Length: 148
Ligand SMILES: [Zn+2]
Ligand SMILES: [Zn+2]
Image (cartoon, rainbow, N blue to C red; front, side, top):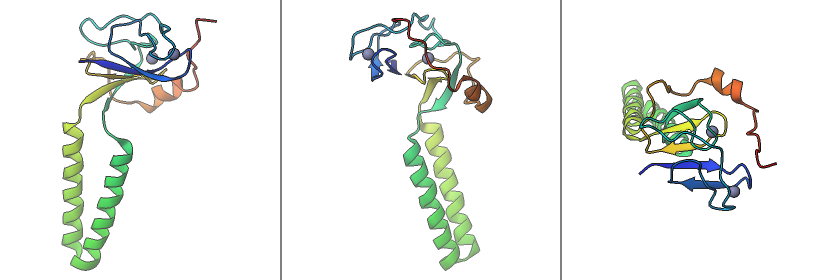
């Protein structure tokens, strides 16, 4: 089942919606922007209707960071006590584990503008992975409040 995790433009609380757009906030009950439902591929943000979306692996970032630090320390220990090949072996093993984690994680689609997270959708083929230039272009653009 697909779901969208979005920040409500009215009450500024995060909610998760599983129904097609317009998404309705579970906290204040007010609808978000009109957006096209995926047909069947997702190419528009279900929360704000913005077409600028990017793909991302649904990976826990803090867990990823812990793994990186842990494998770094292990590699250092390997170099210190076991010499070059043990340390390198640890690094290679850590890299393989990391790759494995990445490919086994589900993919999510995130909105550049309102950062809504779309899970379980089939993304349109034009959607690509995160691009910093596009992110910078959209940064600081607050979602306009149409209820005012
Ligand atoms: Zn709300
Ligand atoms: Zn959006």
